[in-house]
Amino acid sequence: MFEKRKYFTSIFYLISCIVFTTLIPNYTGEYQPLIIAGAFLITWVNDTFAYLVGKNLGKNKLLERISPKKTIEGFIGGLIFSLLAGYLIAIFSDILSIEIWLIISIIMSIFGTLGDLIQSKFKRQAGVKDSGTIMPGHGGIYDRLDSIIFASPFLYAFLQILKHVS
Image (cartoon, rainbow, N blue to C red; front, top):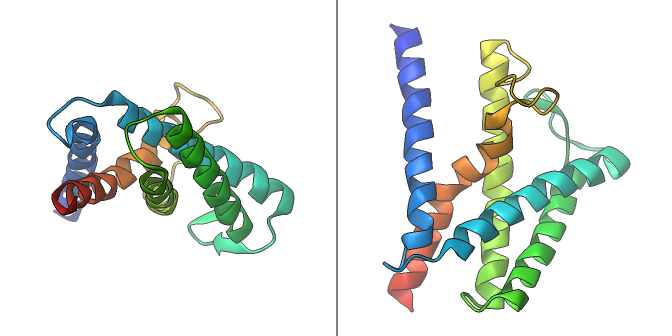
């Protein structure tokens, strides 16, 4: 019984988060693909620079029991470079203001890291190293998308609040 509930919860989590990911570019009722593309770009910049900064400068573990290689320094490095990516997206696009892109960068960095940690916890519970074999050494397709999948409901909520407040 517990196993069925665990699988149901995991599937519900994945499906609901993917639905929010598809809603993001339509949050105003007008299709704006740059918003979701920017969110993906910010997330990948965060993941890449969290890894690079953490590997080269990391000394303090973030949550060692769940993900032993993640460091606080890596998280901060990812956040800083995410902010830079958000700033550049704002400069080269005219969809949202610089301030909004910086807030999106913070949301994607914080909740993306949490999504990555949750996915690591799921893998540890399942006793597997990678979530798939399509991308060997990269943890699988889900590892490439776990951050955006988890962060998407929070980004969508922020955009909805922004839409109703402004």
